[in-house]
Length: 341
Image (cartoon, rainbow, N blue to C red; front, side):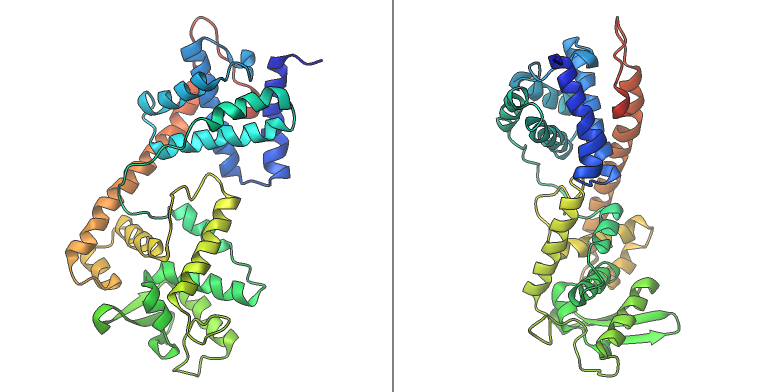
């Protein structure tokens, strides 16, 4: 019969080697994130509790220990509430799996985790997607289905244009002009003010292909995006489509899409932020988005810096501490299990 230590480590190994990649089919990014959460936990147990990795058991991971670990993440490692919640989610996911392997031992662990609430995050900059999140989101729709093809074009257009939901609903075939390898779009914004933008070549191509697919490229008054019941798509329809794919993306990538709320306007914020980070002048972004005042656009400069800081923090946390965890020593060396590398 296996002892408690072997039980914990063997279950943890099967969680990462079998369950996550094969049974759950989770992404490499998610697996890496969860592994890092446990590397940090084992580092904490060694540095603060004097318990090496190979001696950690379910029994040792009581409420006070786990709660102190989360506090340590924030106070000593400088993690944000969002990152702290992500680490807690990793522990909870493992606990749920472990209960099916060793109910008696893991149930106490899960019970302790359930007593720890998700920490509320301080209100800050507007929510935006990272570039990786946008990439994932745009790949979710199933192009083999009619609605999936429409939704893929819709999401791509939202990102490429930064258009408001109502502007997308009002878009007609006549508002598109293809000139060589460029597609110019006329959008009617607030106050019935129009603006002309050029969208990315790739998006322009799939948009034109979509019009041909629907056989409306020669029908100037047709709306570009329609619902299953109406010739013109509504804002509520866009909201439903957007919510559907964000939820699907989050389900496939639990380590991503961590904000509490996303809306179609999130994509507009994302477009503005990514343009700014790409070095496009604020005045150009103002005209692209149809802002009446540059002061509105200026807010994205603050958001962008916050995003930059976040990425730098994640980069530092993802790579540099990883080396520290491996080489962390006191009187005895804390040897991390190979499956967490």
